[in-house]
Length: 378
Image (cartoon, rainbow, N blue to C red):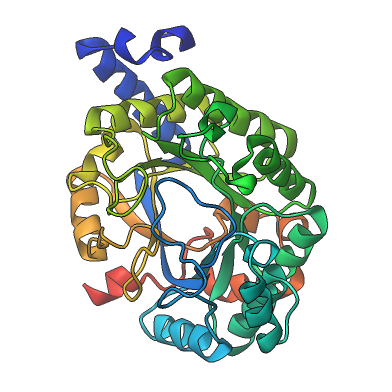
């Protein structure tokens, strides 16, 4: 089946659609085998302040709202330490983008903590976690400059920036990215390219069902392919389905169905280079095991301690349940680290000394986690 036959969503149905799924699985198995991975992590929501106002987001709070602000160093360390006790290896720092550029209250909060910018505080908290625990930071700090990315690389095993979509149309009035300066597609692509120049292993992905067309999805995936071909640093791509949330501008927006998700996943697997891990979150669809039919090989970060702060209404399935459903599909669940084996095999290129040494202590010979927490618990 040629590329053109799966670019139009309604052009492939029935037996042809099953063939599409089968081709996606063949491509996955040729590189990844019968292994599906996940990362055992804690989520550290360093700040829920943000200068953007996405139409689907409930993570962000405004200054003055209850709970708005920054976690303290003690709070960060408490989360990380408890996660370490539960077998976690990754500390995922999730946060709003550059709130100090919009809110004087954010600048005051940072000043009270002893920092001038949110990224300065992120880097300091990564250093704290690495010095006091065995966890490896993964940083989701939004768009960053070359210098900021180089600094992040010093204190993390990887970083993430969801591309979401490359269409500027989605920034128009009434659209999900209206009045969101950090969602300008060019800015996000610049960050992904700059991360490649810094040789920082990256996670990116697309968010489907927010009003984009099928062609805009394809354009977004193709943009990721081009960035990776240029630099070789995209270690995983997430295909995430939009979930409507009360209290947001898109509360009444229709969510993408399972068939839409499966079709997009198979298309992504066939478009992306084989070495890029394809991920879909297991907590956003009850029948998540079906994603394996469409060619995914990774479940992303799953936490035994902290909620999915971006989708708090969707609880994580137990890791044992993920393992069981994965086995039912003829695959085995393996715990990975925040840095994928491909990049661990090139440590001088992709890792700075501190995270490199920390990852070396956690990895087994094949690059996956030496201590498989879910297997030990079963």
